[in-house]
Image (cartoon, rainbow over the protein chains, first blue to last red):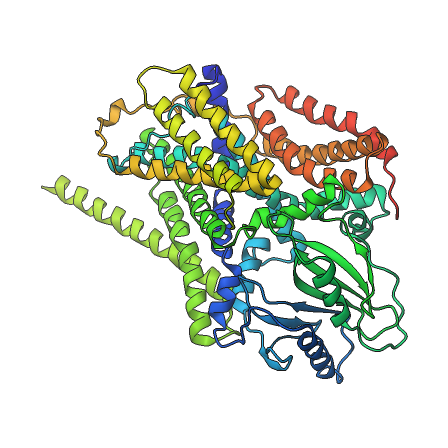
Length: 438
Length: 192
């Protein structure tokens, strides 16, 4: 099958594709590489802290004891506004309680076992999500690059008139420019559905600070939370008067009785210990793309209703499906492995795209040894940076300066490649000089 | 990922669809019948996945199809390839440099295809919201439409703008979309 696009249109498409690719390549490569690694977010957390207590399930009474123990341990500080209990899941079989000021694992009896130590996994997630920048800037930037990945995909299709007919042609063993081109085109073609799903969901999440701000400004007086309330549910009015802490036991019993097909994986307490407190249970719905449904309860555990993630409007279900579709956590390890494989392919596509542009420059007689060296440095630097931070986590512990280590490693790798390019050029100059002198 | 008969059928159809396309595109002459059969079987995989488990089933079928294609590519990558002389290497990139070298201001192009097109896309998304709500749609659907339209509209518009040969056409499209969408700002209403 071939599209009947004119030669001029194809050339324009290639030109647009190259321009977009050159603007985006460095950060897009970083985003693709870190995104591939963060598919194993839960598994990395287990690897980081191998001695945390693990369990396949925990009794509601133990969860309640855990909540009481954690709140009791915070009597000497301002009351937490939210308390999250992560319940054991297949990917992360641990019970972890997070408040405004701490995160701790609890054991099967609800006793505080150890502080949560997952700084490396969090660093990696932050690097992918917001490039270690403040959320507004970083997430928007990542969202913009996600949208540009959509543009690159569309322009790539238009730029390749034989895109489908050549879809299985991979002359990898040539080891030259054609092999690079084939790798780029074939992996890109077959990852189109994956790339579009990842890019659109990522851009939807990342561009919230832009699109959501526009929505909030035009319809909700600038209140972003009010703009999201029709989708994810709103926060009821608070009442700061003291009250006994919430009881999760009847709420969890209700879930087991009324929604046995779902798997609760979060208990969220809002304003615990106040008269305005309320509780949410987030439960996974098997074989759905949605991250789960919010089941709302009073502080005493009386069911109040759902938010509509599972059975609400199309928009609600679509919004709730964005996260799982982006991060690949909707089908256990097989889907994660597929996401890693296709994520690696996308990373290769970004890397080879710039090499194709460099090859083309060199074929036109514009030698670019330093540009090529810089690109090689970045291509090698990003995985090296991730590996260096992981080693630092193992050697230095949870408080290692991951951001500094990562970016220093990246810069050093680029510097090493540039130095090698300079030495090669100097060597060539000396050889040419010697030949001329003879 | 649990396997049950309908999902397994969807997965098998996804693999069969890729295999048919491989067979079809490997032939020296085009085979419309095989082509159509390949695409039809792939479509059947998605429909079966959807019938079995909705969006989840579609996603799983798409992953299986992509995985099958990767397996075929892995085989292709191992085949010895005849190395042509450099001067015979042909790529569709030839001549694309001429387009780029007809240098318009890169910064102005960036400004039009980047921030201005993004602004126009946000206005368009808000217009979509006004139309959904105006037609009796749910507020949640309208709000999600804004979040979903921007990541789709902006890259398409940016690419289209980069393809346009004249600056006036680029500016006209961006301002046109903004102008058509802007009045809908008056029709935004929320529950705040």
